[in-house]
Length: 172
Image 1 (cartoon, one colour):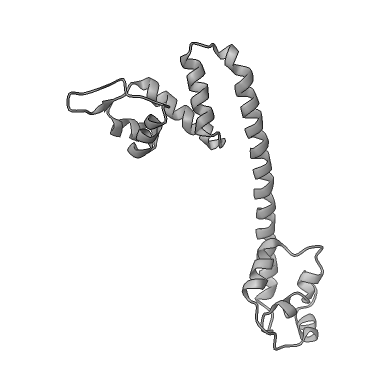
Image 2: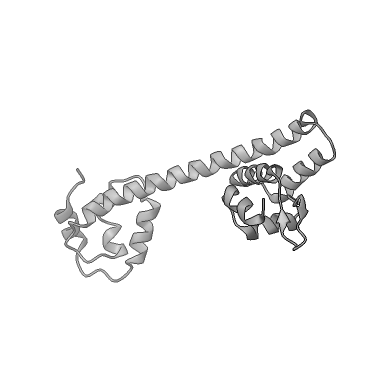
């Protein structure tokens, strides 16, 4: 198959395939007289594997090392321990990222909830006013997204903190 078809079937671009070829990850089976690259299904399988490993953030250098070991005739049993180690490291990294995404998700949800109360606030927003609002002071921490909202609205407050506290009231 030609490079365009390989790219389409692999869900990538011809440029990416050329890049992988330059890095020694894949290679065409042959070229036509006109210089067109022709690939076999094995390269398509490699592309799917490369993309799967990249989802795990495996560096291309490690992917290439794995392919090189296979090329040298080493068996899967010989390569397995090293690959398992790499995959375990990547699994830990994914778990760390998932925890970060969950924390950001919680922050966004909390901020949406707080902003619902802010929509009813009659006072000019500002860090001094907003940070004293009972909707925020009743929380253990201010969500990161809300911190960004408060800082983005930084300007002198023209209303009193007491009015904010009495007008907004406790959260329900």
